[in-house]
Length: 245
Image 1 (tube, rainbow, N blue to C red):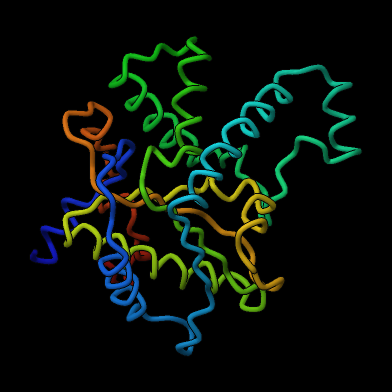
Image 2 (spheres, rainbow, N blue to C red; image 1 turned 30 degrees about the horizontal axis):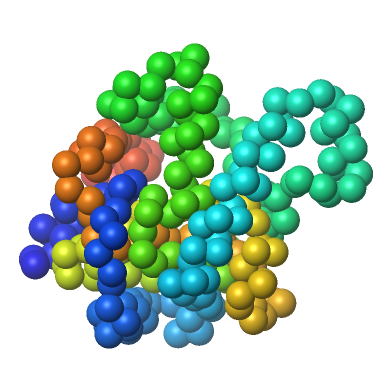
């Protein structure tokens, strides 16, 4: 596949088929992605690969934890204060989930959410419908493979930067091989279920997850393509008389 075609075809898949991904193909994709550039070639990330029984255990464990978290968020102030004091029912991930978007970015987030739920026929006030759709993140959208990305705490923001480059390389490699992917920040909410299955170095922090597999056919949600910002809105303008595009 030509590079431009792979870039154009890559999108967030939110419904996967049951078709398995061979270990050989997965190793090939990961090996390809390791050629991604990183800070002084340090490759400051680790990848945990969940398949088979491990994946199924996580698929059963995470959704109820999400249900409890939503229930807590909608519960009484007293219940929330108790949870904060005991940490019971709260995420134990390494990074605080983004809950309050900056004012200049919130409209983009709102637009994307509105477009997605409109496509699915989920009304704004349909809390149950929105909850069920969000819950699918923790089932990995039925994907046969889930990957979890951990970044070294010692390189500050540059570890996540390098991990992002690695993820994009992996997603493009998967697209080129006819597979689909979905990068998911939501999968960083809980670290403890992963520690049950993986020997994670203490100095590596859970950044995000990635669902990978073959895209399910005839699923409306897989037709979703959010609108991108025009290039001119992303370019920093040059000061008068000092160049710029």
